[in-house]
Amino acid sequence: MTVAAAQDHRDTHELRASAGAHLWRHFADMTTAADRPLNVMVRGEGCYLIDSEGNRYLDGLSNLFCVNLGYSYGEELGQAALDQYRLLGYHSSWGSTHPAAIELATVLADLAPANLNHVFFTPSGGESVEAAWKLAREYHSLRGEKRWKAIGRNLAYHGTTLGALSLNGLPELRSQFEPLVPGAAHVRNTKRFGRPASEPEADFTGFLLDDLEERILAEDPATIAMVIMEPVQNHGGALMPPAGYFAGVRALCDKYGILLVSDETITAFGRCGSWFASERFGMQPDIITTAKGLSSAYAVIGALIATEKVFSVFHQCGRKFTHGNTFGGHPVMAAVALRNIELMKELDLPGRVRNKESELRNKLEALSVLPAVVDVRGTGFFYAIELATTEPDGERFSDEKMRRLYGNDRLTDQLATHGVLLRLSMDGGDPVLCIAPPLVADTDEIDHLVEALEEVLTPLV
Ligand SMILES: Cc1ncc(COP(=O)(O)O)c(C=O)c1O
Image 1: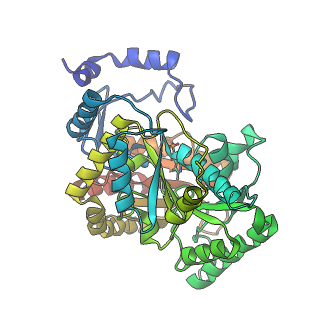
Image 2 (image 1 turned 180 degrees about the horizontal axis):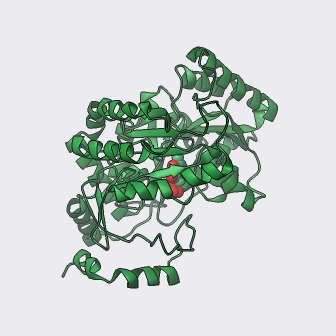
Image 3 (image 1 turned 90 degrees about the vertical axis):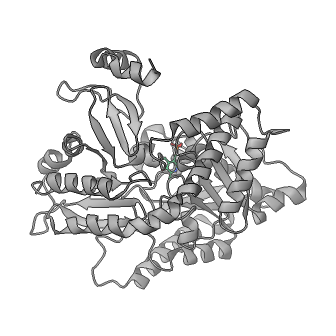
């Protein structure tokens, strides 16, 4: 019997009991309500997950925005892992290295926007961000400047290690761990919903750039090492940059000698219809951080990709970047990532997303007629539906009503009964359904997703 088949046959109660006794799940409330038993997923097929009781769910979030290829490539990626294990199960990329890391770095340098040519591997998105902050600090230090601060954006999420956590613009994740790494400041994000309807886009862009420049000046530009932003910000709900925004951010970074970091942990590898969303949105970063889709989450690997400008400072000074870890660029993880990228190229996933994105957008936007839906935004296969929080007279729902509508996972549980897994985030108090299906999703999956949303959202308010 295969492992998968054996797992399918294991008793669900037994699995739940063992999980309750021993498995400390991440960001999870560990009290299991009797009416909401723990879901144990045992198999994946295409865009679907199958639980230990045989229920099938469309994964509308690519798990954690990461299974870009979907779940049906275990054979190919497993074979790549096996081939590499047979050759060389581990070697670091410290003093010496190995072909898988070299080949993956070369492929990434080729796919990344022009001039981003130097790849430093990490085991995760958060550690890529952590490394980027340290790299920015050391870069300035080698140039004779003591710059240590970083500017991120409100509600943005960049990871959970203390440095990345300090960059998060989510006080509810940060405050219990204070004091955090000093020097992290936050500016407005690009959420346009809720701004005056008459405000021209150019004015909104100007408003955001003024806010950023004010923060830079208030912090003292000579102390700021980097600005970190996602091309499309996930937390807050697929927050799109207004026209001219990233050109303006780039210009401010240049004006004050600050490095611009694009956190592409989610937005790269086809999610936004291109290999890197920085390119699509004209961001021109000095450093890209990434992970997740790099291996479609079939392997534990992340990367930081730096420009010639950044690398050359280390090169010219004959100095090392004083940072490293055991598993960054692990040969098996690198081999899986390489095969993942090869498959993505064969399927032309970025091109596929560009061809399909208007279908997804149009079908999601059709839900805007529902009173529960107040905004639909996003790009590629990366969307958010913001849900109502006000009565027709504009008054905010009572706390009791907010809890009734959006509390206790009620909405996502209902979606699950229609066979669709999605996530409701409440960042900043605003309920947002995040939608990010695997990039192999087709019309059938899009229709299933939208029909479930329609069923659940129509009677909501
Ligand atoms: C934009 C962004 N940066 C960083 C991270 C952290 O990545 P990881 O969970 O791999 O550490 C995430 C995770 O969701 C993310 O969305």
